[in-house]
Image (cartoon, rainbow, N blue to C red):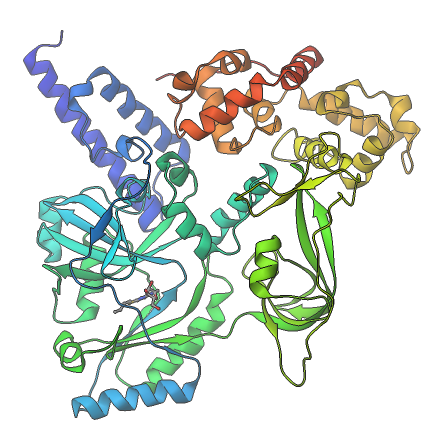
Length: 599
Ligand code: IVH
């Protein structure tokens, strides 16, 4: 039993360590300028976890270890906003923007007006309520008056402070009970990674980062939200439902001083010309931003003047959004093809008349699934607008129907037989995707092998499309374990394979056996188990056998593993075919044990 004084000593230590971690979270996630390495950060976190495990009574809800917590919900509770969350009126050209600015002059009877220009972030707006310096609630916009309480998910976003010291708030001029409003978004890199992983795991992909943000904030398992790396920029501060400072510019600076992330691309402007200059400048920077924006928001700076100008229906007269044109091109759909993924998912892909968009030529664009085709109302032969955002796969966003672009006539139907193997195609009730149900469909096998051999998994260089196609078509590789039975003779019998390349491939296969346990776990292709979860599982259990025999409860002890992931792992190992495969991989000599992380 620790004595009272040693307990006190530990309490102080723990709080100091928490502050240190909060500081480094701030450096990394808010100002994007870390002072220590990821490894050093992990070490600090592990030390805190250990101290808290030894002293569970000292755990506080605002500890950096407590971002993911609580049980997944059945649904979200409704919550009323302190004042309505409004939207903005949009303008799409210079003339409309100029008219808005003139109207502000007319209504106010003034010409000396200050404005603040900000980026229009393309995510979802969200309110954060702090009570006594602690994050109490996160609420979605909903219908503007009533939203959903998504606090557990919001807590997992590392750029949102769980608590703010009173002195810090005082210095920033903010009382301890207040509300912040801003935009939750998913950075493009996270979006791309998430969709790639979902594709591999046989889940439907999100059409854009905005939908992905909404889907992530509104999903019921906080551990899954935590994995998806959302970010939050704040742009409004309310106290008792009222704007607190006299100028919007002051609000932004105060939020920043309190430790919130505020977008650095902002500007005070006292003329229309300066506003326009900002709009033009930011458009040139748009391509390089790590997240999506769809325009610029211009707001009247002085709050007294904002109040004078008031609101029209759902939007303020004192602010306006200027929307950039979509980064897209117009072209014609020549055909709609089907791609079959690793899990048998059939993805309709538009074959396009090649069109240049943002420096590359686009000739394919995804149509995601049948729901999307119906939503767009797209037919073969249609002229469409195609958009490419950042690194994202091009997609069809709209069908064009005017004199210059007549409608196409050929309706697309999802095939009832798999175009690769002729197997039956089904669509499960309530799901958007069609799938080939043939477990032995060569397309599934091919994608499974490609995933297993890819750089982030077993890193078998040379085992790309061309080789995998031949290996699967000739029946030389029927599952991932067969890779380890390949001989030089096998490889030499293939097209475009000389002695040297065959030896290289064999060397690569051999080298892959030395890769750590987490790669093997990731390579198994268990639904929901991506790179990160595989690593947590490896560190927690230290052996594949231990994961195989773990109960759902034991699995949920692992960082970021909730009931859905635990169930999926259980299902995977329950299937005799999968156990057989795991056994073959063990016999092939792959890493089945690893280093357990000290806790
Ligand atoms: S201010 C009353 N500022 O755009 C003013 N909104 O179309 C409320 N948005 O619902 C919003 N970036 O989700 C504001 N810098 C920004 C914004 C922004 C993105 C979103 C927000 C809002 C929507 C309105």
